Image: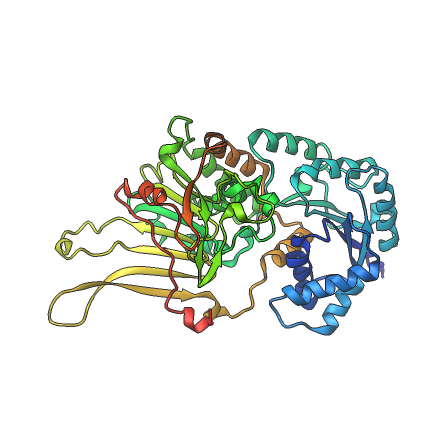
Length: 512
């Protein structure tokens, strides 16, 4: 009888560049705590915070614990927090300095207790994209970034890298950046995060479409009049003035988050649920989006910038009064855009997108607006258009709006709703965005991450837009409004109007 020794588990380390920054403190550390609480981290898992600030291990552990307590949406379990904190170490590092990376390698081997070749490594670059190529080249110089050419398997200590958006500033910079990174890491090792893809209702959109025969046959130009996608924030730049003033609404939200939402709403049925199958269909949509020509950009797009105003009873200052923002800045904080998709499925169906800061309400919604009923029976009673509203946040759920008769002797038609409330049905048990994404990186699952083909084709769409509005004075809108009047004119000239996000009937049940 043969006995086989149990295969030794490879130690694993997550090294976070920018570990003292806002993203690490508000999102990454709490996400790691959730994974710890749910016992999804293996015993050998370690966390190495990397930053420019001089800190000792104990000091960083204390500040990490405080960040988790302040940012966690769940009740803190003291034992789970204590265990996670025990996994954490800190390394001061000057990111452009090649000599610091030799010491980084030594720290990783000391923490793991193994040579790097036997240690599973995840490098999370929670830093501006201008540091991406610098870091990966320095990692390569000290043999911390072996290009595995797709040879990862269960028995090999993997080596992966995570990048935050925005990936580049335009098409040319994104291509240059990707070329530099893929000389060091293979595409299978690269995880480009778009946290919107991890939101429960974004993923539910695929199920809604392809698991329900009552919807998919109606998901085409024959039945849909137009589609609206709104990503609205009540917040301003929140201490990120310097970053935002160099980025703007188009690059910060529309080129990445909103295009992910558009591709999921517009793609054809994938051949399977693998990452490659989903990505293939999303890229097909992006390639089919009619490109904006420089001479018609301003006919199909509007940019705005908020001035002072009131939001939920509180005063908000103008964008140019925000800290770290240039006083005569022309950076857009709002964008509205009309896009069309050149395909048999969507010919003649416009997609209207809008996003902005300091708007009236916080909401991320996809609204499918159906055509008028073919029957003319109730035309004189002015029935409302049927709408399917997918609420990504904050009131996660789906609403179907349709016409019904008001009780009484006369025929009067009113708009009524059928609501699905995600939290009412499933409770507060959905993983947080970064919790799910970090878990998927460790599992080697690319499904919720953005491929290079998606990034490149998205930039091809938006290059003309960013170029046309470069150094152009944005239209002004008051904080607490739904954006500049020109955004309303953009859609109204087509005989349509924006669907204003509103609280669903189940909002009171959630106490939101």
